[in-house]
Image 1 (tube, rainbow, N blue to C red):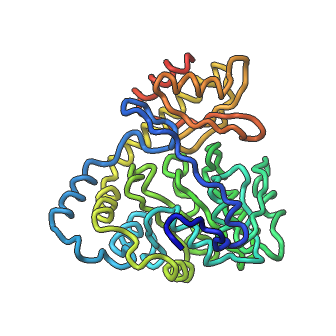
Image 2 (image 1 turned 120 degrees about the vertical axis):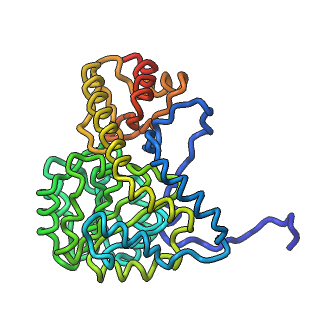
Image 3 (image 1 turned 120 degrees about the horizontal axis):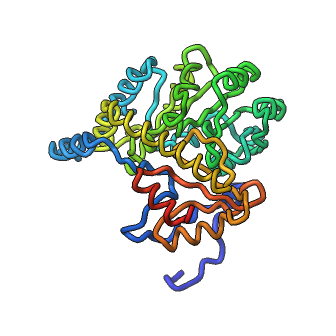
Length: 360
């Protein structure tokens, strides 16, 4: 076969893989654009992060492997959250960690129950594992709906809490009810990527010491502002974490990323400022948008969802108007059968520019 010959036959992917939609990146944003479309931390990371990474690079040890299983970070996370270090695992982002953990516990013939309006990538993670996705609506009695969907084939219940894109959150009492209602052999996986912004930011971690079937996933991408470093972690009973460590990379974090993560984790004052700023901006934006006629669910993340309400509140038209004025937001064309806008909460200056561009 020459280089010009067409490939007539290709290896076929496993069943279900071709059904996973690819993430379509948005067009490159102008340098001056205000990015309120990807739920990044607009307040920025602690200055200590760049300093720690620069020191690490200056040591010139790039020719050596980083610590196995990112153990220094596991120990630091355990200390911050009052956990046993054996109950923590860290990897290069939850988009790697969560599907690996899911694959360790669910496969062909198994079912995974999840909220259909939750994080869209969950559907692909379940198909990648070879399991069957069972989507349920996030109704008023969300826990009851989840439990009613459990069958003899269910191996995992996977939920994002707070949910993306709504920002809605199951309170601690409902998480306890869900855990109590599940058989011990069914794994409850809680994705808490945005939980630091919530009014009750601990939630799932309270179940780690006494539960053998709860895995809690957290990230340093959002509240800590390290999205570019890709650092995710999970906590659970030691036997669960031992299993997950069997399927993760041996060296899951690069040296500079590990140094930056440790510095971010140590700067509690910066974290507190970011969280306080986001909560204040979220509350102010919600009040103002509702007054302008938009339907805005109560959010516990660093974002809010705008749905059409009064005349003049059209998500598609608003997105076009904002984009034309240099403010990028996420247009969701098919949320609950209609279009919606997800808007990241930015700095006060960001939000002023957003409202001017929106004309609200």
